[in-house]
Length: 445
Image: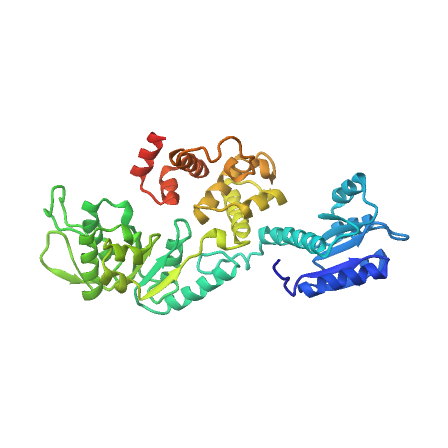
């Protein structure tokens, strides 16, 4: 079990001194700051004067009982969890404790593992609610357009700040939907080039035959349909930044042309024999393993080293802890404002589903899911039953190890497509395939 942080302060309330001592001896080595009280009256004085994360209280005590303390904490300390312990366990007693507001109900005698496990579960629920809580206006101003409080995102933000202070070429890696373009924009708008254009180009979304013309421009008559001279993305970005997304999808011939631009700082329009200088910072991004492609001969080694002067790797959402809850609340607020409706409340169960899901589409998938939840919600609370079916718990039926690989693949593709609201382009990005391959697989399925 992960050790607690210093901020996790626990108040233990019991009228039996030996019980207080045992619980304190068990929890203190785990890193918790343990306070004790021998009565409800004493406990109330402590919670009124001290910020407490969790109250662990006995049920049966002289004068004022544990249920009254639970009610007091629930009505006066909105940022405190409560856990009930008792030697008089009954089903009605457990039901009453939970209805009153206790997150956990533990019967005496209990083991050290049972106690620490119950404490951790109660605190985990508290942390989930804190992560999903709306932030004050100042706190919600995301750094560089990226939201996140995890250590992984703090490392990314530090790297972005360093990258913005230089003018060297940068390679941004990460799975689809992790926010590579957002990171590129952050670097540009925090750099000395901020007043000049930022031009994003999806290299994988432009047909190979048109990519050169789109990047470098063309002169009139260069090819059929070229009725006028037109500037390309590099000319548009002159003085600023060009963002080459999915650089790993470019052909060997295009890679050779990009290498020349990086080396000479010059471009040549299609149909022209004259080159022109451009002052453009190049940021590139990929969700592919470029070193692996280099080894296979599918990507030029010299271009890779030219692009890889600096590298920033964006973590997948599943490795960002409670950031998923912070982002869900942020998206819910933004979408609700756009729709002119009050922001919904996420139940504890819904928050747990969001946190436990593996998010193959990362932040983009989360935004789509929250958008659909806000639009379709018929109440002010989003619960587990409102979540997409593939995110909810299901009991495995006959479909086990007797299915073919094709059947498993087809089911997964359908689940990803459903999570994207039927959007084939975004589903293809999550699956790491192009739309043509996705259409073929859907037809085969």
